[in-house]
Length: 452
Image (cartoon, rainbow, N blue to C red):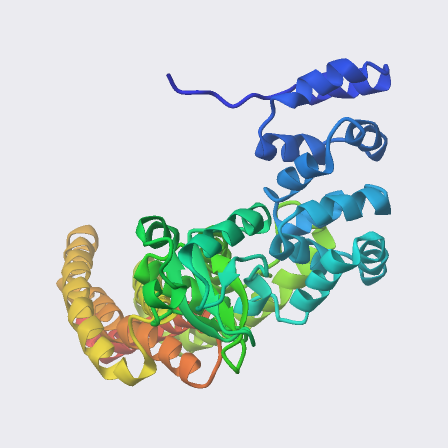
C-alpha cells in the first residue's frame, strides 16, 4: 500500500496557535514530513512562528529548512530570534548551513554566527571562504578518516564514534598525520576484512578526488561518471578538506540546469516566481533591450528589400515561418552543443567534427522542411517560383545558418572563457532571424521577374 504524505490546514493551525491550543498544534505538525513542514513554516506569520518553534526541536526545524532553497531558508530563518536561528544552523549539515548564511544580510549573518558554538561557526566561516559554485563551497567537512597503520578493528571502533556526526560513512578516507589523502576503503571492504589487518593493506590507493577551487559541476560530473556516493575534496597539497556527497550532486545538477535555462532566456539566475517585481524587471529589461536592438537590425534588412515586397506582397506571408523555423533549429543545435560542453562530451578542439555532424543533420532537416514549405507555398498561392524561393530560403537557413551558428557560437564562447549558456541561445535565434530574412528576400529579389 502506497503511503500518502500528511498535510495540515494552515488556517486551522494559525487558529490553534492564536487560541493557545499548543498541544493540538503540536499533534497537527508532529506527523508532517520535513518538506511539508517547511512549506507550512513559510506560510506562517512571525508571531505564529514564535509560538510554533517552542513546540519543535531545533533538529526538526533544521531538517525542514534543509528542504528549502537557500534563499527561502534564509528568509525563513531570519524571522526567528538570533538564538533560535543559531540553534537551527548548528543542527544543519555545515554545507547546507553555509548556503543559508551566505543568503543572509551581512549584519544578520554575523549576529547569528556570534550566537553559535565557536566550532560550528568556525566551520561555516571556513566554508564561506570558498566561492559558492566551487567544490570547496559545496563540500561538508564532516567525514570519517583513519590513519593507514591502524587495524581494521580499531578503525571500526573509530567509525562507530564518528558516524553520528558524519554525513556519510560509505567511504572511509585514509590520511597521513598531516591530513594528506592517500587512500580510501569502503564500509563493505572493512566488514569482510580481517579485523587485525592494517588499513593500509586493504585500502585502495587510487582515489578519485577534486580540488577545492574547481567548479562544482566538475565534481558532479566525476560522481555521476564513476557512480560514486561521495568524492573527497583536497587542497593544492593533497590534504583532505571535506567531501561532496551524492545528494549534493543532485542539487548541483538541478542548479546548473536551471542556471543554463535561465541564462539562455536572459533571466537572472537567482530569480524566482516570488521575486520582487522591480528586481525581476531589472534583470530582464537589459536582455530584452539587447534583443530589440537586434530585431531592429532584422527590420533594417527587411526595409532594404521594401521594393521587392511591394512588388510581390505575398512574400510577407512566409517570412515568419522561415525565420521562426530556422531559429528553432538553431536553438536545438545550440542546446545540444552547450549541454555536451557542460558534460565534457566535447571540447572546443572538436569544433570541426561537431560542425560536420550538425551540417549533416541540418541537410536532412533543411531538405525535409524546405520541400514541405515549397509545396505548401506552391499549392496555397499558386506560384511554383514562390515555392522555390520560400523552400530554398528555409533549406539554406536551417541546413547552414542555424547549424553553423548553433555550433560556432557556443564553441567560441567556451574558448574565450565565457559561459556559452549566457548568450549563445539568444544570439543564435537573432542571427537565424536576420539571415533568414536576408536569404529569403535576397532570393526573391534575384528571381523577382519569375515571381510577378
